[in-house]
Image (cartoon, rainbow, N blue to C red; front, top):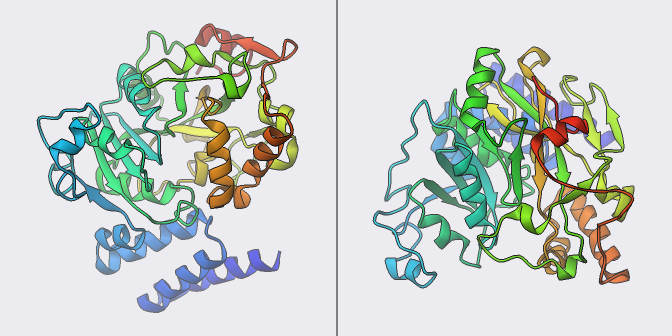
Length: 393
């Protein structure tokens, strides 16, 4: 409690110094807050606001280690792409390729690290759903992810070696990119293992959903994270680049969540869901939050949460409908990935969830999430509406 109070006090003081015109002292104050509370989304936003006022938005890009990336600026050449079987007629982005975003574009923002296997299907899925431009941050990939991204004509890429944790789990990078390129535009925010699903998504594009939300004067669309898995052991769930995620991991738990806490966000504006298959299999120590805000219309008043678990928009700006974020974490690569992320300590609570994953997999190397009692095979979006996971507007 004492540490949280110190952070709150420091934030008030920083705002006060700003109001008094003491900008350098205010800047130091915000950085004090973030040293105490690196996950304080409001402090990050005000910190960026101040840096933009003092020296322009590019200073905030530099502070958070975000640099634009094209073939030249990344030190890559065309042969680097061909070594991955890739070809591109033009350079990628940043210094080499101007970022061009139309008012009608539906954006997708993502942070990736070593996701070369998932990226082909991830990109194809969102293109098929109506996403027209991707703004992607590569956070230190070494597996060819960067080269794959640079080969795409609709993907703009930024690189950073900055801490994922200190960037509030990537939300600060999204804030910067959307502030510069996505003002008043709809954006999907998703990890490379996440597919945004919503009622009638088989026939309705994301752009059509956005048009519907505009007519209703809504700014955000909520979802429940739904972990997907196969009927086999995780160690036997092999996946190859380009395959449909759903074809490999078609099952989910009938009980999508274990707890629902109303008005429990910092803005007291939405219900937070927790639990799901991870709590069933790995226990409750990991605090598995399932609430997501995968689709929003970005404005400078919007505060982006770490993990996109909540939104600052008021209740009357949040859609009544609800979708799902299908989460495809449990391919066989998950075993080595969990060990790496446990060591890196970049995720929530010093990677407490990864501690639970590693512990369970060590005790049961052939661990499977599938259960005849709990598991259901995904058939359609209407099925998730009928089960209460999703709901219509």
